[in-house]
Image 1 (cartoon, helix red, strand yellow):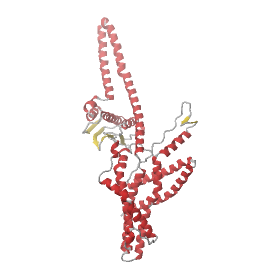
Image 2 (spheres, helix red, strand yellow):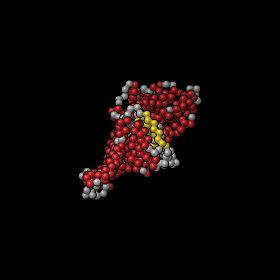
Image 3 (cartoon, helix red, strand yellow):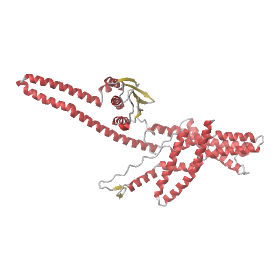
Image 4 (cartoon, one colour):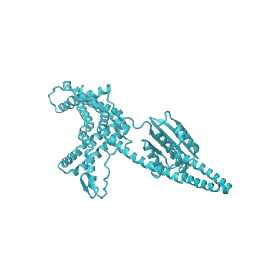
Length: 507
């Protein structure tokens, strides 16, 4: 009962908010007329207000209705860059400051974004659709009270039925409103694709920087380690060549030192190769490579690995070095004694959980090591979730998809079977009970018209007319809602759930 009362309160609040959109709609219409007359600087503030309103609608439908809707807007344009001469170019015009090129780019970004016009379309229809959340239940209650006021044997049960039906229909109307809002305001395929492109550009830059840093590290290790020892070995062997005839004993000592230096250089080269791609990882896979790493760690490490199919080599390498960095942080900064590593496959993704009993307080914003792990995983659409309260323990979870992004054609699978029939019936016949047999008949009944025409409800006995009118309205809304829900669940929402949250879509 309390839950139903909360639902009714939310529906009334959304309905009242939808009716207040008439003011914003009037403001946007005035701004659009002024922009059409040449005062284009009114356009962006108007679109900003509309976007704030639609963002509020997305938040409310997500929090109250459980219909999460990501912002659909295309990525904003980058700030203008100066030419070598210090001027800023926009098309064929040159400017001394970046103010006007940035304004033109932002205006074009808002004007050409399809989400802008979808927001305006939603704003135009929302007073009617959202207002039904408030007006239809109130109309049903009013009609029911009118029937109860007559106090005849037929009107009293009909009045109670109309009131109960109106109140019981509120959760369904609210759910329909959430589906409709999601359908109108959710990201389109174009915005998802733009987000993917931007994300790939960012990953490409980060990967290039990471590779350059790795090459510099390898060059530095070779120059300071193995290369220096090989040069020293060459000089030692040259001295041996000179002392071979003069002082064989000293030559033997130098040869022993050269042999020792070659052994150290070989060890350093093996460590360098292990830092690039460990042989045990290539030969025996991720599980055994992590177990070998655990044996070399000064901590007490427990490894649990359950991998059915071996991941791709780049994925294995990224996870291996991420675990290595986490172990290093646990030993160096966390003061841990024990570490537990669990490697497995969950929901089509490789999931690694690293837990230590250290002092906690780890934060990627304060250290380059964890940021490096995030950049390494981001190249494969992987994420690092860190839970490290002060005092410990620290739990790091790595989620990395095994099959990449999948085939985009899977998001365009057409409706088949009963779903296609239900959507066709909903869109094709939903207008019949909703408008002529419902809303139009309701207006005839309210204004007391004697015309019956082909409105079936008006041919019924008086106490049964209002229940039939309300039933027709609810039936039409239910048919449209079913069509929207099936279409959204099959294609649109499926696309967003798979690609949206990890793409950095802009609001």
